[in-house]
Length: 139
Image (tube, rainbow, N blue to C red):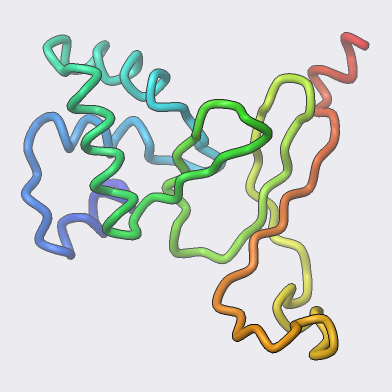
């Protein structure tokens, strides 16, 4: 059973056929699919699944904190099942590919008190941008 399915079951989430298929499609390392990509893959496993069901299921998973919603540069939102392992993202500026990265250090600790302006910081999101090897080869 996938890590995401196990986490959802552990929360007592009712596992319908549609929810199971969406979770299975999202399972894996470095998975950052758009809702439409999730739907396209889900239809191959469960032809009757609707786009609305996929969007609603993704929204529920985000609300539960089991999937992260990743938005970059005005592109379609992507969904990241790696919600429980601290990581940052590396984004290709041409094709929009996203990879999880695990840089050393603590980005929260790296921000000096003088740069916090009295904020109580609860979360840090760092996005590294560049050109992926596939796009660099087509330059």
